[in-house]
Image (cartoon, rainbow, N blue to C red):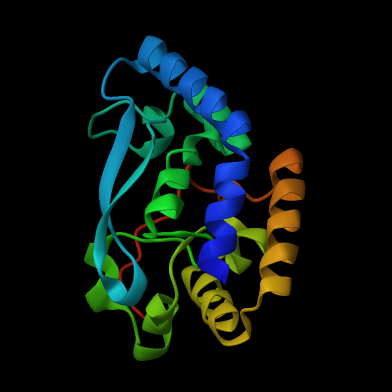
Length: 190
């Protein structure tokens, strides 16, 4: 049922998000050049890898994230427009609208058995951790919230998370942690 509702919701909102995605792609191309899309291998359902896509928000290079993110990139992240390509993942079944955020495949051997339970469901564009702190949370807190979601998931909870996400985006709440533009590297389950 969840997969069906995800597909119906994404398809029904195509007239809203497709023009936004095209405009965002053009803005990224003008601001940063090509590629317009950032792609990375991420762990999906049961830890299976898939090619994760989002609009690029940083320049290439070896500098810290805070120095590589562009002004447009900050706007895209604050409005979550950088996430629009993930709607294609929802249509393909690699992601859901709601679930734990997909993280890099290289993290898989670093999870504790309890943390790895986050892969028992499809990853989501938004999730329980995102509406309860997003990047301002520690890794342990984030994983605890992910596993809580796995244990308590329901269509009613998903609807609540989607509504909370809309409110968070409009308030621009919890987008970046206080020290950096993105979350620090997850190194171990300690």
